[in-house]
Structures are given as structure tokens and as C-alpha cells.
Image 1: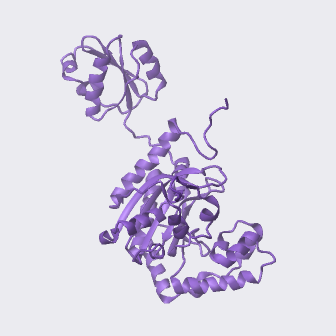
Image 2: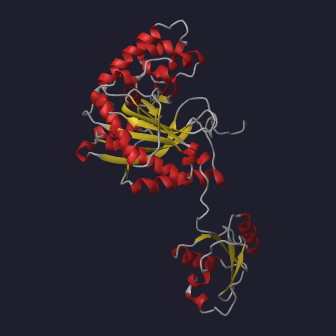
Image 3: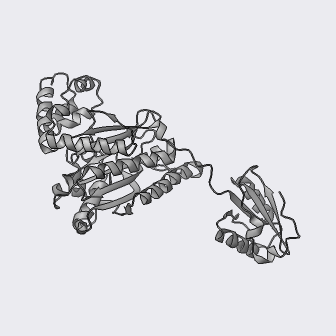
Length: 416
């Protein structure tokens, strides 16, 4: 029988890796509450058309990377490769325009068939923040400021740079697109095969090309500023002024584009050199064209997504967490006593680890293997003893928080 193994591009997490992951999610949940963002949940799989229509047939995600399958009813379904299209579908289907502007966040697993590498998996996880139904630059500023605060609170902001650009309005984007088509068409002989395909369907995507020959052409390609309408220029200026007022530093990258077809106006990425080639940790922008393109009312929207695995690689675990205290018995047959003490301490906010075995000696062996600041021994006759394992740990006053019968036995020692 062959050995059972996880599929390529997936991961198992335990210990510090899982703790880092959880730390990113908990920090995100705290920050989104500070900004008044609610929660939204959407299915892990959708009709394939949600993504093919929402993301665009020419994107790499749709053309190469989606996990699609036919269910028993003959319907084509796809494991979600990103959140935004599913949230837009939910906005349309459930009539959430009545609630606009809607400020929502979510997080969870996504799926793309691509080459696994450091910080990139085929089943990966993202944080996601969206504002739907708000067309003002202030919405762009808020979502970017929230992303910046997330990085600040994770302690990674000094290793991450915000790159900012605009894709303009429809008139700007159209004129820029025509100029790019003309420019790249004059260099077909050196353009990569993939970029020649993109030239016909979505020439802006050529600016994302990693092919060495394409990079040289991209460096000399027409920039968007030469085609900026007055309205689009004013919008981008308002975003920049709002970021400055919010204390968010950025650098202008005139060639920055996003990978999906639905983006308009603001485009941004928070990038780092600490992860090697996979440098983007948060990316997003304004996608005013998406909901209308999917059959809903024309609705302005802006948002971003962040890779949890990548943030977890950058972030340091907090050192000010509540110390973990193990509670063990000093004799066999004291499970009920342990349960009573653990319940009391947890009710007072103390983090408690109780070894899940019956024998006292085995409990102690397990407790010593855990990352605990102290071990509290429970003895027969309402006696106890505290053994400190981490010097200098800010331990709570355990004795004062013990059940009443232990408080009556203060004459017995609680020592280090």
C-alpha cells in the first residue's frame, strides 16, 4: 500500500507555524474592528462563470490556474481562486446594495494550480477587505490605511513598502491601452509569445511580464500620466493627499497594474524584499467595473487581499501574551480536582494547560514538554505548589484566583 501524503502545494501546520498563522488572523480581526468593518462569508466553491466573468477570460488565474470540476448534476464548479468575485456575486444576489456602502472582511482558503514555492501554495489563505458602494477617494484611503495599520501591528511595516499607481477612468485607460497596443505592436519580433497573446486581449497585462526581453520593452513603454483625464487626475491626487494626511508613506510606481480585468483608478501593492521573488504581501485597488460586468447595478468598490502565509513568515510572535500555566496532579485519581481548579483559573482569564492523561507522573512529563511559564501542582487536601519555569514571566496571582477551599488553606505553601 502506498504511503499517504498531502497533495503537492498544500501544507500541514502545527506548533510555531500554526501560532504565526493564528497571530496574523487575530491581529487582522482586531484591526478590522477598529475600522468598523464587518464580517462576510461566501462559499468555498462557486459556479465557474462567477470567476470567468468576474476575473476575465484572459487572466492567468482563469486560463491556467483554476481548480474546476463538474458536479453530479453536470454543473461546472470552481474552488475559489480569490474572494472579490464571490463577494460581488453575493452583493448582487442578495440585494446588498440596499446596505451600501458595505464594509466587509473575510479570510480563508483559496485554490490555484501554480508552481509551489516559498510563501506560495496551491491551497493558500488570504485576508480580504472590501468597501462596496463607495466611489469617493476616501474609501481608497481608508482601506489602504487599514492595511498599513495591520502591517504596523504585526511589526513588519519597516520591511514593507507601499507602491501606488492609478489605472485612471475609462477614458484614460482606453487611451493608454491604445498607446500600448501601438507601441508593443512595433516590437513583435522581440515580444514573448505569451505577451503577443496578451497584446490582443489585455495589453496592460504585458506590463506584468517577467520575460527578460519584455522587461526591457516595458521600461520604455508609454506611461499612463500622458493620457490622464482631468477627472482621473483629480481622483488620484485626492487619494495621495488622503494618504499623506493619514500618515501612510508610499512610492509612485507608474507601471504598476493589477492582474485582474476589473480594476479602475487606484492600484497598490505592499511589497517586501524579505521573501525573495514573492515580494507582494498585500495587493488591491479600485474595481468599479466588476459588479456591473457581472450583471449587477453599476457599483463602485475598492479592496485588497493579503497572503496569510507570507505575513506569517514576516511577523514575529508577540512576547506579551498571557503566560501559559500547566495544572497537574501530585497524585493519581485527581482529575475532578484538576477540572475544578482549571475552570476557576480560566474563568479569571488565566491561560491553563491540563495534560490530557490520568497518571500524575505522566501529566508532569507532558507539562514539562510544553511552553509553559509555570507548573501548578494540586495536592490532596486542598494544598498546592507553584513551580516557576520561566524567570521574569509576569505571572498572575494564582493563589488569589484559586477556588475558595484553596484560599482557606493559605497556610500551605505556594512557592516558586
